Length: 439
Image: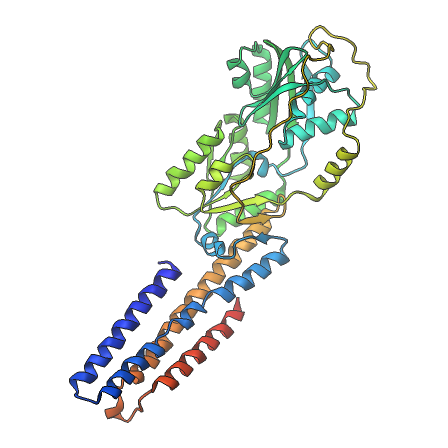
């Protein structure tokens, strides 16, 4: 039962008790002043101030503890939802493979490694995806020349495409490239499956209808991440991974981390549909996602969590701003019929900016599942303290309402007049506030 509902029910009870006490005094044929004073005393003694005060200070103190962990809580009231959440959904496998990503292998087909990487980076330059930034950064480190690209399009969960020298170039999953008519050899598909079984992420590159090879990205699953995930499970959180990756990669992650459930090859809208289905079962869902890529899924979650940007990301953005132009390659990448260097007929299309209509409730340091586990534990303890204080407040208010109802005077207990009733209620409120410092 929610905190606000308990307060409303208590208010209704106090009003009924005040009318009941006044009616009892009327049956006893006491003076009208005494009857009104009795009802007023009961009403003032039962004011919900102690109940209201049983929670906000607890939430504030938990928020302060969260800041000590480097966590930003944008909505303090959401901590109660986090404490009652039954499932933590991870929207991407890269949240678990939190090690620093790197390109483990380049497997070109009919082109050089430099041409393959340059081709992919030219397309990925229009994307903000972490893998896109990795590919572009690697191309810059190797001083490769990027080609002008137009008509950039990004398909979440599938890949990106752009026109380079009047030829559509795509970087993404094998299924998507095959749907677009790309011819991928059985040998390349088999190799990609083998890499997925080892936890690596193969990105396919195609130019027109021809496959140009694989870019293999690897991110290690650190022991700290596995330990923190197990700690979250011990805190009675069911862990679920919703990934656009293939079944083999999802199976590898599940085997390494022992998370509860995995859903693979999902598009963003399918992830949102999964969350809506879970909500129909009255489950409280916390989602760790990307505010740009998972907007629909974030809107479907009860608790929205995202990573704070890593510190080095800002430095990279600044350095990229200082030198935005691509640098020519040290390795000669001469004219190639599969990757012609004729300039496009139109200017490069700028990627439209999207406005964020949904904001995260909680922002956690990048890759720090342990901080999230500690926040969950503190929120759970805080909710227990708030519940205890609520019960104490109700008990003490009931004790005040009994003499305020003027029913114990035959036994020598003095009547609690309205002034004393409100003062006693305020004292109880102060007492509850002092108890909140336990959080």
